Length: 362
Image (cartoon, rainbow, N blue to C red; front, top):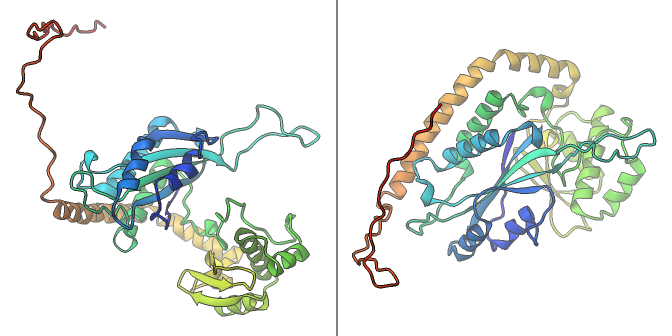
């Protein structure tokens, strides 16, 4: 499982709702798990703050039908607890939408045609939308701020992955050289691995890109082939190679490289191990990866203990933060009616006769 928060969140509530459920609220393979879409949209639209909502996804490599409803609800509730510790359920709103349309599998007949009824659910995605407003006071609510929340949320991810036996994205053998979630495309492969694209086709895409995603995928395939050809050594060689592709380096951070293309209005951000500051081609050789994988497996117990300590400590800090920020916010008192209820025939309302609740016989 991966936890991903999206950067956008300043627009109207229709934006995330239309994506998650479709503009007609009939998106295929989308399932409302928890919350009220109408209320969430209205809360977002009424939010006076610049950051109106926070959205993201718990993304799994496992198929949706591998989880029971109870397991999904458990993961969702524990994620909410991780974000909103110290708050009561009536102090925030969250909407959960399941998607299961990614990477669907199906059987084919001898002619390569899809066999009707053989399709299985795609991988599970638990999408969430949170209006950035504390509901009792109307104050701003920030569900996730990377500098203070990332370590705690990452520990939560590790705990869930281990507890449920899910794919661990931290395993050395699963480290991605490129970003595998560009337009939900499969991981690019070198041209000698039965790739659907050829060098000439990618040269044309890079020279005249039809869109950003196609350009990113073509660049990634070029990078993978260059690594296979032993042309890359470190980040310096990566930057030099990007320059040879006719791309201008605009910015390089610890985890990504942003480039510009004459035909594109905006910069293109490239993510993955290739583009990290500490990239070393030698670390991606099969022998090295196998050694790192074995070492990683030997430290599973110590990592579990560390994640649990990190999560608990982070929860204490976040709980204190929330309680300090909303210390004077109390739940409203129950409404007391001082007027005697009257029936339509003007007779005084009589309390119903109380009876004992029957017990079930086993």
